[in-house]
Length: 109
Length: 119
Image 1 (cartoon, chains in turn orange, cyan):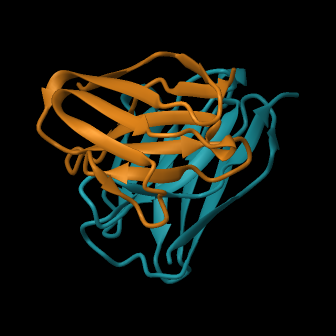
Image 2 (spheres, chains in turn blue, brown):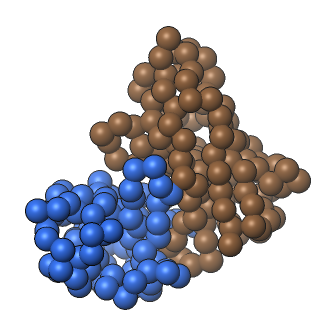
Image 3 (tube, chains in turn red, yellow):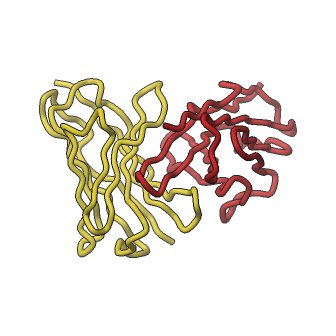
């Protein structure tokens, strides 16, 4: 069973600051990781797939990196519309299950 | 562009059955490689995968819910469904439908629908 942990739980930033969100997998995963953004009342928005590839429409201020157990989502310069919850997620082919991290809330300092 | 939309009652009485439908537009449901999922988020808690169904009808459920859950898929109607029996307040959540995309990791999501279990 894969367990994903995210840190920090909350990240308080001002617009223009850099955001670094961490996702740790246990055990190490050889498969790809995705990051998505969640705002109340909206469909979750895929930002990064396969660890480091931007989804269609994802601004280039978002980047993903990592391998094995440690993965990172970076927002190079936070914009007002970026204040939201962010989740990492792993998808299996078989069994057809998805595992989520507990999320990081990025809010306004 | 594939789009998913959940529908169903927002209020269900305890011990009754929660029934939701996810309508798919902008594409088909006939790929044997993709699977269709239900995910929920109780108030103040994290996201929880609850079950998956393939085009051919194969299902896979979260073990703790297996005795109460049924999922089905109807590609002729472009929708898939969730039935959760004998609900309690613990089943109160935002329920999302989703499907796998062409990448190795991404999902395409619906907007979610809030279901409250209360008498």
